[in-house]
Structure formats: structure tokens, C-alpha cells
Length: 274
Image (cartoon, rainbow, N blue to C red; front, side, top):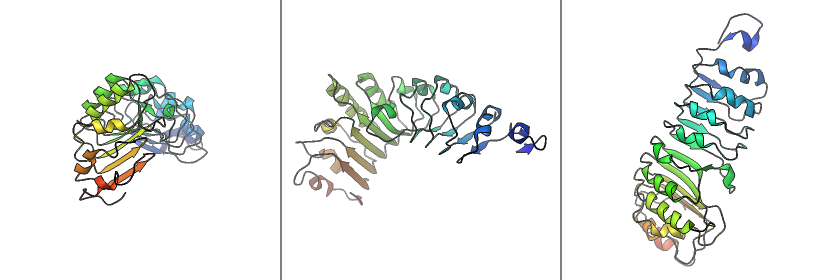
């Protein structure tokens, strides 16, 4: 950027026309304190920036033209509700942060295409799918998220028509959760654009993912499928054998015996890795 006056550092720099900014190292505290001056910023990549604090989020939420925001690997612990002011945001990366209980304001980011949170067994670090998610029509990638004990949310997932990558963990320890996951299974069957699916369970219930047998029709274009959680007695869902485009299959924490796994997978013509 062009300096207005020599020797004044960031205070003397003309940053109003900067469109993209990346920071990865220490020593950026002063620049972070002046983020609000980057009024035309479209891309802000702060991955691994250890100087970033929760206080800086108030400046970031005023960068109204942002389309890409990566906070991956930073020490932030909260996202303020003012994040919904970033109405042009398309990519939001929160992986490997300390954010707990992501603000529901995120559901008002109607142009958001990709949202990524930390992959962990702790539900509080993942995005809890909110009521109103059906309005986020631009979503193409969600990872990682939690489906709580909310039948309305389970049904709304079916309206994410553009979704191509979905990573969701279910909670099955609550009364009535069997009805919720049954509706979720129906929704999965309607996601015709889905290419990558990771489905897991927060708790260690050996039957937590048995509901996958209830999918009326699977997402036919799946190329990657991971099942991470309890699935006992019934074996692998038979619909897996109809996924002719499936290339990668991954399974963990399941309880299968004899040919319950390969008895289904051997039918897949495109499968390369297990």
C-alpha cells in the first residue's frame, strides 16, 4: 500500500483500496488494530495469526464487503452476533479455534457457501445447525456441524439444494431423538448434489447410526462416505451398494461382523480406498 507520510507505519498508509490481506506471523498487532480502515477488503486470511484476539472481531464485523474470512488456527473464542453484517461472506473458516457456541447470527449469512469448524468429538466446538438453515440456499460445504434434538432442523436440511459436502454429527441421547434422526435420514435422501458425506455420532451409543438404514433413497452422486459411530446388529446399509460413483469409503467406531462390510462394498465399481 502507498504511504502517505514516511516513517509513520500503518498509521500513514493508504489501505482503503486493499482488496486482499493475509497475516500468518507475530508482529501484526498494530495492523490488526487498524483493520477497520480496510473498507474495501474482500479477502481476509488470518490463519495461524497468534496476535488475533476476540476484540479484533468487532473490527472484522465492520468489513462489510468481505467474501472470504479465515480465522483457522487462531485463539479467538467467540464470534459476535454482528457477524451477520458480513452479508457478502461466502467462505468462513473457524477450524482449530476456541470458539464455543457459534452465534446463531451465522444463519443470516445468506450468501455463505462454505463454513468450517473444528473436527472434534466435543459438540460445543462445532456449528449447531440452527432453525432457519433452510434459508441458507447458497451453502455448498458444511463441516463440522451438530444436529441437535430438533425435528424442524432435521427437516430443513432437505432444502439445502446446493450442498455438496456435509459433515454432521448427531446427538441420540435425548428422548425423542429417534424421531429426529429418522427425519434427518429422509432429508439426506433429498440432497441430490451431495458428493461428500461424513456422518457421525457424538455419544458412544452402539446403535446411534442405525437410523441410516432408513434412508428412502441415498444421495446417488456420493464420491466419499465416512460413517463414524455405532452401528450394530444391522450391518452396513444396503443402499451403500448402490453408490456407483463412490471412490472412498471410511468407517470407524462401528460394530460389524463377518461379511457385513465387504458383502456390500464389493458391489461398488468405482471404489478405490477403504
